Image 1 (cartoon, rainbow, N blue to C red):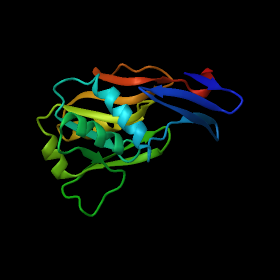
Image 2: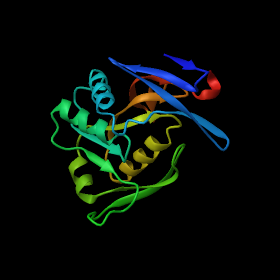
Image 3: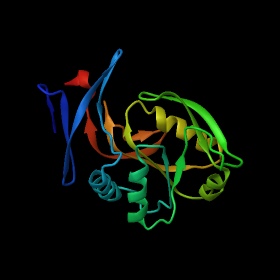
Image 4: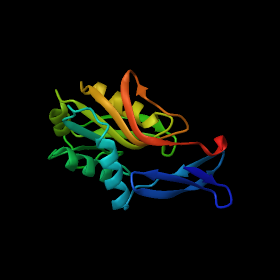
Length: 188
């Protein structure tokens, strides 16, 4: 859509929904904040648009806490799935036979990723979709792929609402689908 230089926003549109992404400046970095948490309308519209592009044989959805959880709920519902899996960033007391790895992301920095052993069993042999809000440096999806590889789970497709900085159409020879793209602030 476009940059509003006067107010440090980037305008996006998904289906019928428009939002202004606020420019966030940190120490040596800047990005437009795409935060889906608590935005039911945005999650629903994003799920509708993503489902139009998904492979027809997806039978399991995986996401990472926390910003894409509501999106996973909407996509899961639209696809008629009764369940989806959330990879956690800390070990929880309910987990048994959990598998974990460490990784890096642009926003969170160093992160640990944990998947419950029951979720691993549920995912085995399924056509898995890994769903996220934004793919930027591929740090999160790299970590998720490493974790799922460690569990013997194959990923069929990655999906995100937006790619940031550059359009990503595949990662490790796995298709990536998205609703669109927004630039890094330096690329105005």
